[in-house]
Image (cartoon, rainbow, N blue to C red):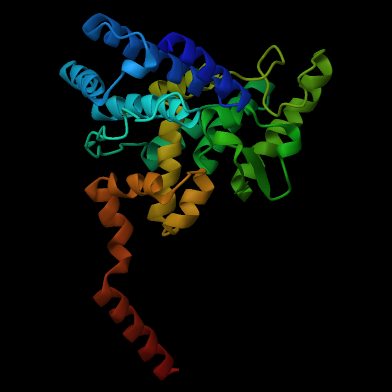
Length: 315
């Protein structure tokens, strides 16, 4: 069977499974690049001719291009998905990717915003006009809930509950994220501005909670642009990437610093397993980690207990 023909079938199956467009594009591009290498280096165009030797050669080819380990591992995941489908369909007996080892990834320090930078960003948009209230709320939701960019774009009016947001996350997984009092305040300000805005527009998208200036659903590039522009305007440190995902990093690390347990943080972020969440803890810089544990010293806790005990005795 020709590799290109099987890939076309695999991609169709991905659409039937309703995988995200981003995932499908990643599967398609990665495997097409692999097929091009197999054809030029080994003359292989058929599925049954692919073996672990040529697969390892392609991985080595990627490594020699000085690509990051995380990128190489992402490509391996894409290959695994394709060849697992071929194996399940009975097109191959031996999966050539099964013995391909993952690259050991270096654990980077995730640098995020400081509290002072977040405060400056939150105070940037002033006033009660629609765009000002909307942009202020976008920042508040990102910092106070850790939503992914596409989750924020997809937020509907019906998803706003009294005490929580109903979020449709990755892989169609649903989770609930609490609404704090401060976030509720920004939501009320936005909703007051939203009502006359909706009345003045003839829109078929009123079900979406956040709308563009033309009363259409927000796009991810728009949210990226808002965060980036505000961050640079209020002089966020140049080494910090001013993006929605950095807001998510800030949210996760603040929860951990506030002693929220790892399982709860994972659930709030919508992670599929604790290992993903653990990266936030492992990659915190020393100062943040020391601050997080400064009030957890056994002797300090013991001393505080002695003081409390003495006060009770004096009473």
